[in-house]
Picture 1 (cartoon, rainbow, N blue to C red):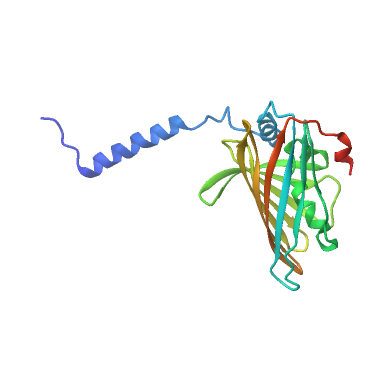
Picture 2: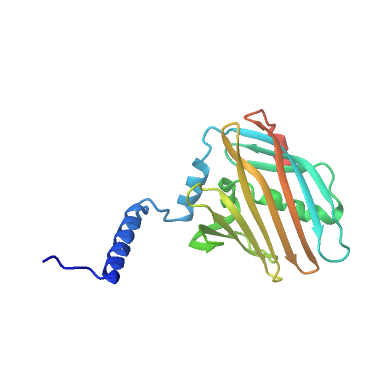
Length: 223
């Protein structure tokens, strides 16, 4: 007479089948990035036919403490392969000059290793999703910046989030979203949260009016 499985036994069997199915669907360690260089190489390999672009950039900043200013910035974002990226704003208030550089610092992964040591920290869960975290420290010691963490989507190899940690205890966090434009994946928007001594602010950035694979003068990147 066949043995009857109890409900608990049936559940255990189903769970075991599910586990084996999930394990079979997971990427093997052979294909998982083993170093920061591997991750950056995969990031650079995305959008292989994208040679350059220009895009309009609009920034809305809101200070959350005195003097509660809400400046707006407009400018142009430039990219040229392999590793040139710049954002030039039309007019920047004197108190915004340092912060305007943040939108350049997200930049291109292929340029991160020029002046920074980059290591793979490993996977990290954030808001229910797993990211690969790269940690960057300045090759020349900085008295201001301690380190920067970049959160990379392991499926698309796009930068989803960057966190700057300052020796003063302050932090700046930028999250970035993307969209497909003329068949290429390009930045769509950013949200910044600034929490450093004497400055608490949030900012939102929109990228639009993309011109893809157009001529970009190298002089743009020497400004």
